[in-house]
Image (cartoon, rainbow, N blue to C red; front, side, top):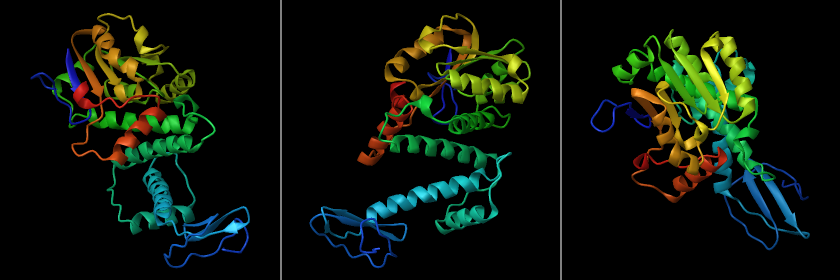
Length: 321
């Protein structure tokens, strides 16, 4: 078996290729950055407005610059995402808001050249925004299955776009992996198939390839059925509502994709051995894992944990794979 770690360029492992208006809730224009503190309330300046908060009839004012910066950053992310998705086929927006979003993107100095990578990045950001909104809903625990269809599709198409780069003739994948995918009887296993975007990309790239996709979310499989049908490759993809822990195939697949960060920790720890047993001789296991930060900081570590919990997955550090 050859294992590929997709957290970096593909390579072989083990030596192989691999207002204040004076009333609660009033608004007015912000001015200055003075911080005032009182006994029972706060005025938070965000997006150029004062938001007055009062408690028990007592009032205080505070200029919370850090909160304002966080809110600004969220709006910047939304604007950048909109600009990147403007080139996505089928996306149609309003000219005025598109121009305003581009102004924001220009003002913060974000420069992303034209090309398919632009759309791939936009789809990935769109999916993350959906996850962020899910985290923000404090009335419920985040659940991957609660993401709306548009977010699931954006996430899947982003992953498919990355595989279109990986599997391109001039891409970073080893020649041996590409040859295996292009073999006449090749079968690809997609663990966590989602909306089927990766299978769709590979079927279009390798005309003789057949795929098997596993997922435990019925709604994702229904979306995959629609997406693959629209792509004209549904007949070459077997969709299974199946947990990877229940995979019993043996010598069945030439290449398998295992995105460990999307799996619960207990599943991730055993999935690699189960999938390996389902590979044919000299098959390829392509693994997604998180690249550890050589200089971690508390914020990044906290965000990593939050992201993992949001998708029901785990941190899956690369050095533990």
